[in-house]
Amino acid sequence: MNILVIGTGYVGTTTGLIFCEMGYRVTGLDVDTRKIKALKEGKLHFFEPGMEELLMKHHQAGNISFTKETEKAIKENDIIFICVGTPMGEDGKADLIYVKNVSEEIGRYMDDYKVIVTKSTVPVGTAEKVAKWIESSQKKPISLDVVSNPEFLREGSALKDALTPDRIVIGTSSEQSRKIMRELYKNFHCPVVETTPKVSEMIKYAANSFLALKISYINELSRLCDVLGINVKDISKGIGLDHRIGAHFLQAGLGYGGSCFPKDVNAFIQTAKQHGRSLSILESAVKVNEEQPVFFLDKIKQALGGTVENKTLAILGLSFKANTDDTRESPSLLLINKLLEEKAIVKTHDPVAKTDLVPQYPSVLEAVEGADAIILCTDWKEYKEMELSALKAVMKQPYLFDGRNMLDKKLVDSLGFHYVGIAI
Image: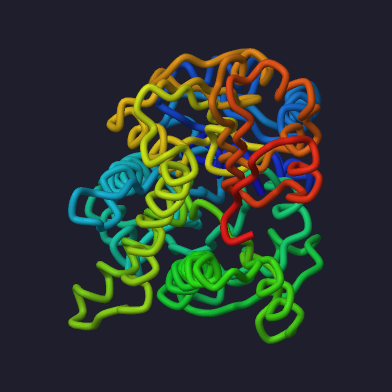
């Protein structure tokens, strides 16, 4: 089976390389000349640990190729994965314009039976729409099957998630496509959920929304812990050891961000509204997430005498989480904008992510020089291993605000810092 992946972003590139690892021949199709040029040279256009090495391996072996030739790519491949973006529209709904455009191109150029697989995160019922878009663009009737096969990748650990998944979800509506998908995934050793496209699409939204809900739950608890003088880490440990709850996503911090949770939760809420229902718990989770950076900013202002005006603040971490360069919906950027509104002087550092909002420095030492405070916003390993004494020596005031509760409070305090975490 030859596999075509349409869309060579984070999901598409990862999907293609994992199938190369499974022994398949993969073609990546994209309209973005910059992406295709970089990938043809074996260079990754985003940061993900271990991914560029895997790209180079399969590029040199000839297992993967990249092209902008849409018609040729569609005709020459048996299985087509749709991995294009589904950005959030102004109304909170997922915008399916790219999925629609790709579907119409598939219909225009396909010349025999194809299995079209939606890997992009899409609203419930999208598989039916994709089938209609393809069929309406065909020059003559050609049979096809549309399958829903959502991804469950975590940025920063995508290779591990893709190679050893917790589960594979396959939503099909025909025995022929079901057999093809079983064959495709035969070398994976994990539970496989075989269901309908609608159920598969909803599983993806429900999973992401539940994880976002856990994050907002512990963040809201952290505010109560703060006024009660309770360490929220003790609460996380105490409830996380219950196997019915689990310890993952129970670390209090600045809130969730990235390309998935904010968009997917809002889209799920809008899907419910379209069908006359409300997901009030998720609506509350969104509100908590929006408020969490403001809660932390209030703690910063309180510690610095009630204002940040004319204070020099060093923000460490721009990406929404460690091991990625993704700054979409990053709490760090929201915090930076609010600090600028309050006339603070902001300096930044991040190992890989970039911003044009404020001056960014190549080293942590340069970023904190002359600063009244350090604000830790992303849990990069190198921040946990910082030589704090050296940083304190170049700072104006030794305040350290830990927005990820990643440092040892007793140790930081012993070095002469004024440490402030989130309910810690």
